[in-house]
Image 1 (cartoon, one colour):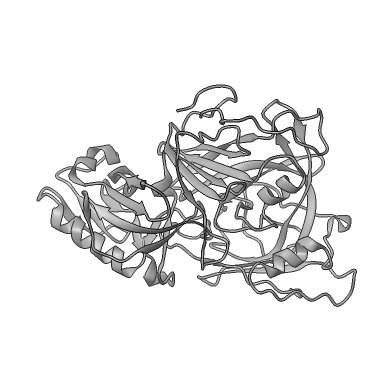
Image 2: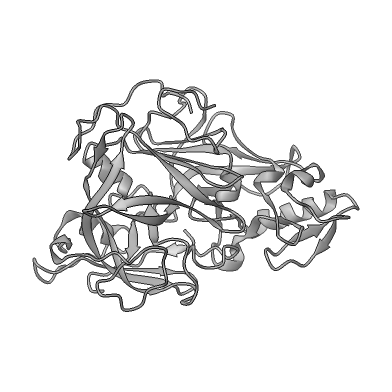
Amino acid sequence: MAARWAPPAAFLLLLLLLAVLAPVLADKPARAGRGETDAEPEASSAVFQLFGNVYPHGLYYVAMSIGNPPKPYFLDVDTGSDLTWLQCDAPCVSCSKVPHPLYRPTKNKLIPCVDQLCASLHGGLSRNHKCDSPKQQCDYEIKYADQASSLGVLINDSFAVRLANASVVRPSLAFGCGYDQEVGSSTEVAPTDGVLGLGSGSISLLSQLKQHGITKNVVGHCLSMRGGGFLFFGDNLVPYSRATWVPMVRSAFRNYYSPGSASLYFGGRSLGVGPMEVVLDSGSSYTYFSAQPYQALVTALKGDLSKTLKEVADPSLPLCWKGKKPFKTVLDVKKEFKSLVLSFSNGKKALMEIPPENYLIVTKYGNACLGILNGSEIGLKDLNIVGDITMQDQMIIYDNERGQIGWIRAPCDRIPKFGSSLL
């Protein structure tokens, strides 16, 4: 996951360093949930509207209501990390300017170090969990590849979630209270108050909702090219019989959701690179290929372009082209480019088509730029990240119940209603 208040063109792999001291109806209905509710829930799914875009905002975020009484906070939707956290007045040592007043915790909300969730959080990467006393608080530190960081303490508070049947649940969930940040500009207002971690770890909000019996351990998102979209928890909207499915593969890079290895094709032809380990990460605005597939793609693109396009410098992204007149949208230029395809060996006929509109942006300067970047240049090594730009106008489903990842083209600017057809 990138630090979203950093420049979106520079993906920053989130390294979680933890220390003790510091649609369509589903093929079958969901089960009833449990927990503190206004009314006993009958369907265990929830849908949230998304805001933002790939360009120029560089992120998609959701509004969540937290606390009692509930207050709104904007959270960056991140399937590439587990911990949800807010910038927090505990008091704040160093915080960015955020859209809402800083969250203020109370002492009785602290989660002790001996709690199993703290052990799970610390064990997520370092496996170094030690408590000096039963009353010790659960500290954490998150560090980003660009040296941005957040230091905080694990707490719990209620999250208001409206379910499919209009009932509201208010489970008490664990999240991070970040009181010492080094992220982005200290003068500009950040677009979000924190991060919504939706990875597969037990500290993830998704896993906690499953433990409370409120939703199944299934999350999906639909990011619209026109901006916005929707996020859902639970499986009521999952088109099981229509989507393309592959088994989840345990990524060598933390708790990333991985559909496994893929071969890369451009215009129907193989680019001749070895199998690429692919992960899906909504915390990355752009898509990142490792050095070999990236160079092969750039060579193929340049060799295939018409003479009407000229390479041009643009501060938005590294590789851009201009036409005879400025482009207004990707639709003006998509005919000049061919589709990419990722062919996954982990599933039968599991293809992810990437048309030009899923790898190009048009900047405010009227240029078309490649939204696939060289991840090897920023320390991603052999990891290939499918980011927001490539996942736009697709419903992406991370089904931890069945251990599979699915995708299907969908109109993401339409917020679905339960009981109606989306696709």
